[in-house]
Length: 289
Image 1 (cartoon, rainbow, N blue to C red):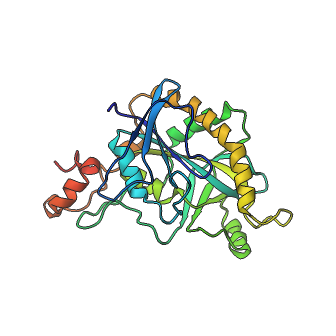
Image 2: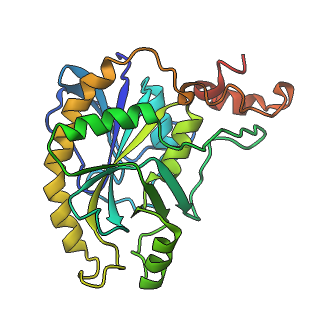
Image 3: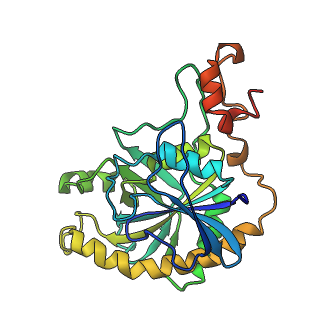
């Protein structure tokens, strides 16, 4: 199959991209188990794109249950170099209103129960993660969303909680004091794994609510989320149609995402188990011949 450069992970409200043409469904087996669903590969605005619904079609996988390692590994195996994450989020700022779009540039990890690395079992790797989102890809996503006319914010810190419950009022107030801008449940460990896989990663976050800190707003409910998700779904898909050719026109990657493992493997090569090298050849093969 032809290598696919752009991968899209659809979040709550985005379970398919209907505009894809010449569609092929691909089921990828990985050393980490099965991904969330089949990967749908199709042509979007003249560009081959891979789409994976994070929660599975029908939304049957909780944020904690998502097999992010399998998802990222599967996209990598198809040749994907750029990953765009579509995520719903709550706003921690009065000026980031429901139905606005945010392209965050920082992330804060409050997850507790999720495997967040491909490595271990005899292979130790420490990647740089000071800039968790690829600035090159984030800029392209920003330009694509801007073409839709959406109210858009560039930059900000995304706080990722374990879920599946929403925040308490006490938690929400404290998170605001920390200076975070938006809150969600799924960008981690995806972003960390994408960096370990040397893939560019950016998040297109659509605001669905004000979490529970806003005294004049109703508490977060599923009905509220669904209404705002549906309002933003068409806009998100329009942005993806603009984004696909922009990514395809990119020259060879020069961002640090592309070589994240070059200086990150600390284990002596002769001490790495053969089975680990075999399972992770897709990620480390060029560094561990």
